[in-house]
Image 1: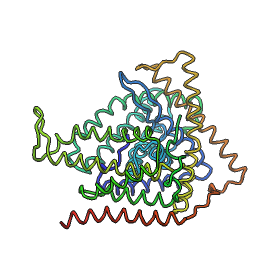
Image 2: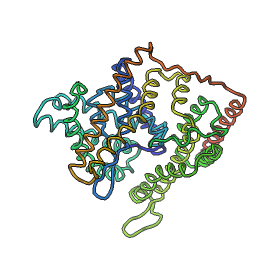
Image 3: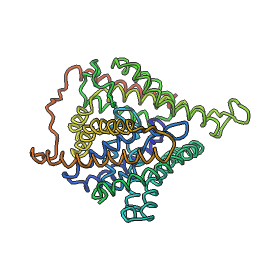
Image 4: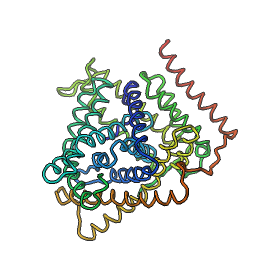
Length: 197
Length: 253
């Protein structure tokens, strides 16, 4: 879900950068030096997860997993996503310097929102936890798609159809990310419950 | 396998001071991204092509990277001209392509490619470790650099771990399909990656504390601004002047 260079307007890029810097500053404040190794290595896991492709019908898409990273790291997801996305840009040229702020927001804002909205319920048991975990995966992608759309629409209203096509194409991914997040959170709760706090 | 195909070559570009390359890439990207007219984009694209040529990169890897970015650009070419309101240039069936839509696509294409090529030639040509230390000298906060370098350090380890888990799954007959079983398997795989990452983080943190880690990775690389860097800096300023000059010339004329 990266936006490439050269598409967004200066205003959107500037606002994105300022907000991403603010979010990262909050995140870094919450990450003491003894937690920074954990955040860095989780950012690596997030980076690797985004390279994992799974089949959907005849095509294949890659995992995003920003919801799970949000549940684990909370505000720390901001600097972690920034690090992972910087590496995406440097190593694969997904995104770039000027859109780094916007791309960080697209990944990190949904992560932090899901942390705030669903973490409490995801830690419980039974159907509530399953629903919360599903919503974490689903909404993390949905909010990301909405933010992508917002960045395009604030650039120019002529992007309306492009935005609709993009957000629509993410719909199946939202559902599958929801399902995968349910299994993943269940797994983490069994294997290492302290990771989710 | 995660590779950095451009970072470990040897060309005049690779030998330039990383700090200079970072600063130029940032300034060039911002200047190009803010452009609203065609005039400055021709010299910008020209300069970016010259820089990539000077970096003498692996052409196959280069073509792949350019293709990835242009797939999205192509998608815009398919949609935008027909949805943008304006004066129709040509008509296909019920759809009319507008001049304004085509112009916008042209602008985006030039901008995207110019910024991409400069980024490849200036930034992708340095190893991430070097980039981190160069960012440190440019006064980027040490905590974010530490996080970046740690992330870089462990992506290769985690990726190998993933390959190992995947191989183990395949040996047991796992074949990815569009099925719940596949998604469950991938979910457990990724869950295991997160668990291993967090376990490893504890060990790494302990090891760092044992070695008296105080919050910063020190670099033995001495960044030296050589005469060739001064020449390059002058040329880079000149390049930016040409781009900005083209912008003003097109406004004034």
